[in-house]
Image (tube, rainbow, N blue to C red; front, side, top):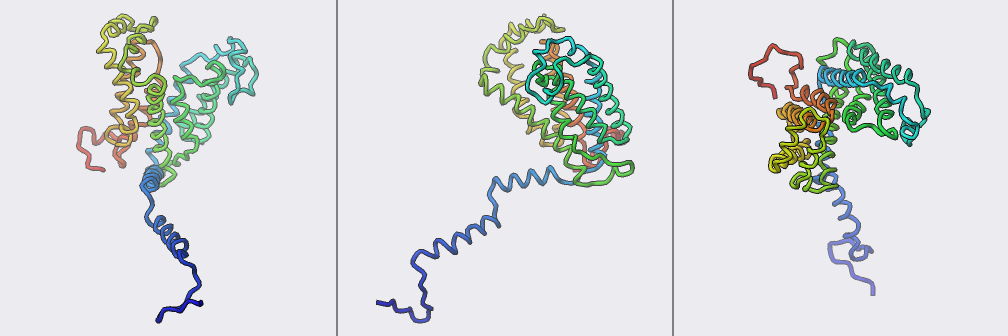
Length: 327
């Protein structure tokens, strides 16, 4: 039998359930486009904050300070010592594997000199982007050669990664420092993000490999007893003998690393983070003799300028001691 159409309604040959698989899914998809999920909104919010316009002078400050850190590292180390190392320590598969096993010391010194010259271009604001690329490349290659098997030493890894982000920055030309553009805004924020992620990952790796026992066990006491050539060996051993104090040091360091993104997401706590890491790395040098000065200087080079109000320059001392009303 042929179905009788309902009065007032057109007959249709659409089988039952067709509406549930046709119109409704399309409507649901449209609704999802109009109302994105929480993850999508979160990602879009992060992207909007990273790519918001920023003043040219802030990029100039961060760019120049990180370049100066690179220059300091280039002149503070005797890179020619790499030439005296066995070939087996420098022939690993890295981005410098194309170099010969034995790099002459004069080539190493020349790389450092070229890198310092690149820093000079940055400071002089003459082809600053090219100068930064030259300085960072020389620094990264020398760090790779310095480490065994071409591995970048952990003492320099933060500066290398923060500098990598700034390779793509276009610093303002003279007279454009006060302009606000996306091109000037994203590089300092990206450098700040890398700073937060690197510190956070150092804490995550501790928890991943050792668990929270890294802080709550006698682990730190054993670490402190290894600093035989440290400037404050006696003090380190005294702290190691007091388990609660050693555990407090370890817990503080771990918490600082794991909460780095929280410190750095808020403008008013960024300078405090730079101060906190300076205290932490200074204690590491005193107790263990490990030089993390590059981490301290890099954190300060990025976090301190980014802690200032958007309209305030790093070198502006006219309002020193006054209360800022800028957001």
